[in-house]
Structures are given as structure tokens and as C-alpha cells.
Image (cartoon, rainbow, N blue to C red; front, top):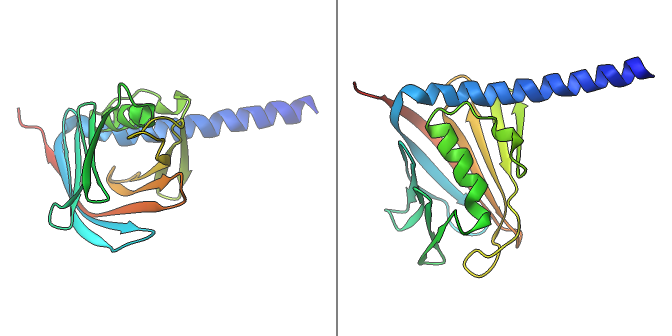
Length: 190
């Protein structure tokens, strides 16, 4: 019985270490990258599918714009701006717990940090085929007067480090999935 428990404990530790090291190797590829772009398709569970672009720029810009720049989701520094219901809304990850961990994970990734994001209480990291799946489950709290999001699920390609999808699940049951294609990196110039 003890050997079985020890084996299971070692197996779990090995799996967690492999997932963490996979995230770290994907993030490490961003160390030499200054920016990245991709084509994005936004698919809401209710509503119309739209297309646009993803722009990533160090140290802390992630911008998704669709529908001729009428719809956006932007992280710039600790400020998050989102077009929701035709209105631009802003929040700050230092004051809004819904976005604190999301900000930490994204800035760690795009700056090539080898920090262990799986140690954050709201984060799980899992492998699925050739992808690493990062699930952020933020605490309920004020987000434009209410806790809007139940989870953020970011899927990254382990071979290329490209963003594959970002799914944002709302507490009310709706969700929005961003699918990224034609991902291009621009290396830092010296």
C-alpha cells in the first residue's frame, strides 16, 4: 500500500513538473521576441462571428480587435479595456481581482519569464497533445459592478509557442472564443 501511494505521489509530481516545465519552455521562447501578430476569429456563444487581429508587444500589451476595430479586448500595463455591449469598459488588475492572475500569466508569458505560474492559486496548467492549456479561475468580485468571468482558458502550441485559442467564460453561461491563426513573431533588434 505504501509503495502504491509513493508511486502515485511521484507520478503526480512528475506530471505537475512536466506541465510547469512545458509552460516555462513555451514562455522562454518569448525572451527573444519583441512582438507578435496573428489573425483572430472571435466566436461568441451568442451573436455574430467577427474577424480581426491580435497584437502582442513587450512588455505588457496584448490587443485583440475585431469587426473593424469596433470590438476590442486590450491589456496595456495593468489596464484592461473591453468593448462589451457596445460600450468601452476599463478596469485595472491591481484593483480588480477578476484580472489580477490573468495579467500575471500574460505578462510572464510575453516577457519570457520562467516563473512557475501553476503555483498561483487561480491557475491550472495541463498538457493536451501538442498544446499547453492554462486555465485561470478568478475569484468572483466586482467587474464593472459584478464578477463577470468564470474562467479564462488560454491554449498555446508547445512547438511554436503561438497562441491557439483564448476562451472567456462568463458567469451567466455565455462564452467568447478567440481563435488565432497565421501567428508571426518579430525578434528583438539589438
